[in-house]
Image (tube, rainbow, N blue to C red; front, side):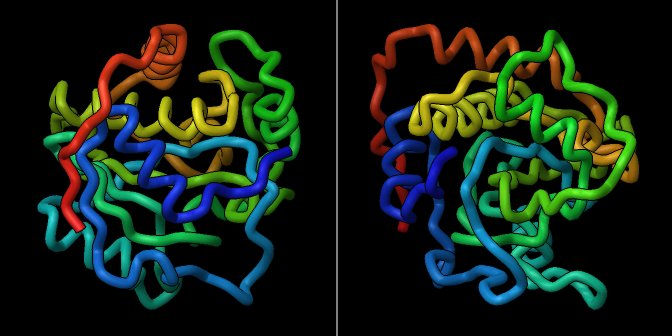
Length: 211
């Protein structure tokens, strides 16, 4: 069980992991407060936006859409690996998913992949950080090496801050059987990358910060 990181602690964790950070004005108070609980948190869910371009993607993640108000994530990872901070607190990113998957994440006891999601009976917005990668999600739009490294670093930063393993990081499609994201890269491979980074002694501290 872990209390969510404060805004300052999240930024510090990301910078210490070498992530390039852009804080969008107002992100520290931008949340779905009042729509449900936020925390305790147990992991990170990775998504794709089904959009292109930074400006349009930030706008969509910030405001949401008619059926789902924003923020739709805590951070948006662009094609260069930069993370744009969008929300702090509860965000509409995970929706409902499988309690057995949450249990597997909490215990960090599964193998290469968590159990297949079969039931949508648990509020994921209360339990997971959410990060979107800018990608059309059509299987053709590439995931540049810099963007995949950004996902790796962001995930490792949060895991390191909470003392979690890479098994605390899942894809949206691993949380619920109603989603296909992230499409275009393999989550077990990404967890292996995160695990390697977590085993390494952190040797870098980024000053690439833009408020």
